[in-house]
Image 1: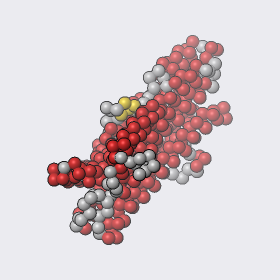
Image 2: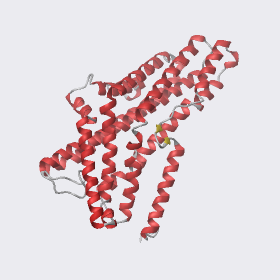
Image 3: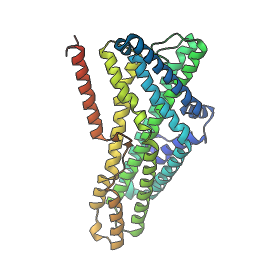
Image 4: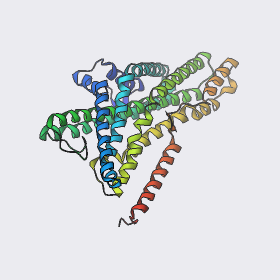
Length: 381
């Protein structure tokens, strides 16, 4: 995207994501990247590798008992990571067209809203959208860089030494070179799919929250013209519709996607305290802050901007001087705001600041309990 940083718009960021899924205006590298996001063979390969790892864990547990399970913590963490990655791949393999349609609709709403906000009197609303566009763009670029670095870290050792590294199968390093390269390709796809899933979720959520915030600012500065209120009510209804589609697409996959930052972090914590160390642990423990926390904060922002903030902006406007029809339109928008949009996770609830604090408290309590059971004193001895 050739936009300068100060000229970024929400519609441009969404259009870039849409183009990357549709293949429009992207070269061979872009098409290869889109393929690595997730295909049916990649899903099967990842799930097959996960089954192989779990089979090894089961054999170790039967052979060595509890000590075998402790020594297999590295593999269990890796299996959890593979399941989260497989669900990310499955998401893009099954829902590519639906996601593209959602982004097209969201892009249309953003384009129309930006067109309506042209002019010096809408400077505040444009500033709200510009802030969201910069934030979404940072996540888009940041996750691309993260996925690229992760993919290089998986692939490079295989092609230089033709030997697997811990990221392929942590406790079973002896594999033939062809099989090692196949596993490396699978790990490459896992990194890309997992990062792109988070990027898409955050970009869509941040963009939607920014548009809700701009609509609220527009309501607050409205002068009661029917055509102005009709435009706001229509865009608000369309944005709610797209947010509902987004929730339906992501909510079924998020429980599995969150297994690595939540379940994987718990297992990695056990590994640290009981002496089983792996580079996978070092990458998984921070994920509760890199993945789970941003999802919660963005979900909380979406909940606030689509609900309480929008209603308060409408109520704090000069609606007492408006004609009856304009008041009815305002009441319609405010009534919709009583049911805010959420980032919902099936079998878990919705993600917001309360959920983030609850999970962090549970994790620290779990860490304290394990520390007491392992006999490690607060000073590390």
